[in-house]
Structures are given as C-alpha cells and as structure tokens.
Image 1 (tube, rainbow, N blue to C red):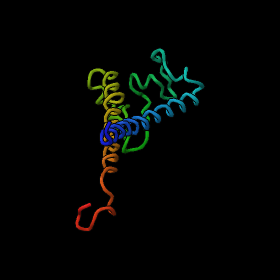
Image 2 (image 1 turned 60 degrees about the vertical axis):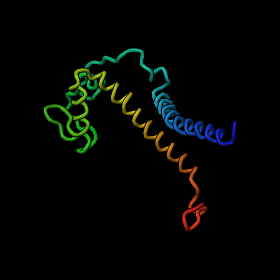
Image 3 (image 1 turned 90 degrees about the horizontal axis):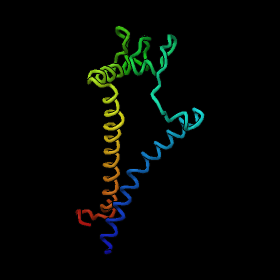
Image 4 (image 1 turned 120 degrees about the vertical axis):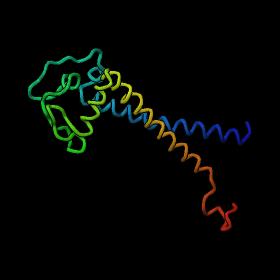
Amino acid sequence: MTPATSTAHVSRIAWVVWTLAPPLLAAALLVGVVAWGNGGIDRVVRTRRPRPAFSPRTCNWRCHNHGCRHGMRVVGPPLAGPTRNGRVGGLFGWTVQALHATGSYRTANLLVFCLLWPALALGLWSWVVWQGLQLRTLPRVEDVAPGGAP
C-alpha cells in the first residue's frame, strides 16, 4: 500500500466510524434508559401488540391505535393546536391525519418514522462527517501565502 492509498483507506474508515458510532450509541443509550426506567429490557421489547380497553381518564395505546376521544391538547398551539371534533389539531394532528389518509396507518407510520426519517437523518449526518473530513485535508489558512499559493 502506498502512503496515498493508506491515507484514503484510513479516511474511509474514519468516515464510517464517525458516521455510524454516534447514532448507534444514541440508540443504545435510549434503549438502555427506557429499559432501566421500565424494569428491564423484557418490558420494553414487545412480543405482541397491546390491546388495552378504552380508559376515560387517560390516553393509552387504544388512543394511539384507534384515535383519541379525550379531546386533549398534546404540547402547545404550534405543535398540537386546538381540538376540533375530538381530534388534535396543529402539526401533530395534521401528521396523524395524513398517515391515516394513506389507507394503511401502520405501514405509513413505519415507512415514515422508522425508515425514511432515520435514513434522512443518517444521510445528513454522514454528509456533515464527510465534509468535516474533507475540510481536514485542505491547507490551513495560516499555511497559505498572502497571494493564495501554499
């Protein structure tokens, strides 16, 4: 291996490590915190779909799976907005209605929030890492002569 190819190889390895390590570490930390707070990993990983009965006092998985009849506001006006006809408005309500309008809420939910959104985030993150590694190969400002030649 020549020095030029070994540097390119190390740069590729650095890009892969810096691209994949932070999201994987964040995901592991999130699962660990949720598992710790819920009494173990066996209570976090579901083996079947929850089917609770409607609870008049609080939202549960039934509200998530079949729509909420509580008329609650989730976060604030910009995100949740006022309720209309028992439905939450704002960005959150629009998102839920758009997912339901696709015909298959479950499939749309999985595609958007488990595949497309993380892929977009990972793509943008890898682009930032790649640009950072490319910038490291450029000469420093103090190494460049006033005329512009290194």
